[in-house]
Amino acid sequence: MATWEDAQGTRWVLTPIWGPPHSAFKAPVDHGEVNDGAIVAFRLEEKAGKLTLVPAWMSQNMNRAEPPVIANGIVFAYGNGEDTTQSYPDIGLADTPERRIAGSTHAVLYALDAQTGKTRWSSGDQIASWNHWSGLSVANGRVYIGTFDSVLYCFGLR
Image 1 (cartoon, one colour):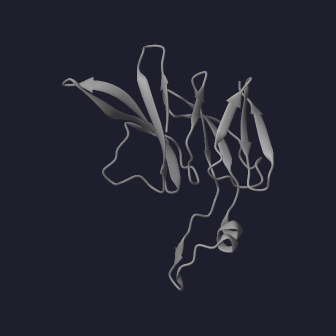
Image 2: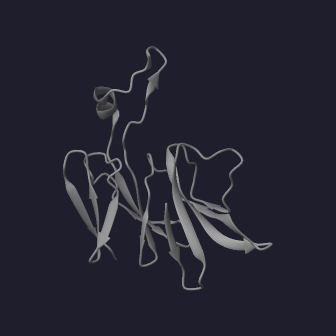
């Protein structure tokens, strides 16, 4: 999860989800159908003397969204592209590296508007491999992501 405070003093909490959202979950702003994962943003509000997380927006579909980072009002998030299948109809549980690596695709980095979740930019197919659990780093006006094939990608913040 990640958090940030906007210029009006509102505290935001962002979290990734994998797969589609629960049928009972509704965000006031969404950016299309989500099947593989997304980033969900909540505002922290006080209601009746208690702090409450209020859904604000849900990003576009991301292939296995991972925890985001926020810099200069921009949410940087990514779909890791990893095949997370662990069971199969014909053989049951078979979570092996050989199956998961072969079924994985590529990570996609997204720059989202922190207030609305609207995609401002994505890396598209520029990243050649998948990533899982290594996360994003932001420093000196750049965002970094490493991939399974040991490549470190660097994108400028604008």
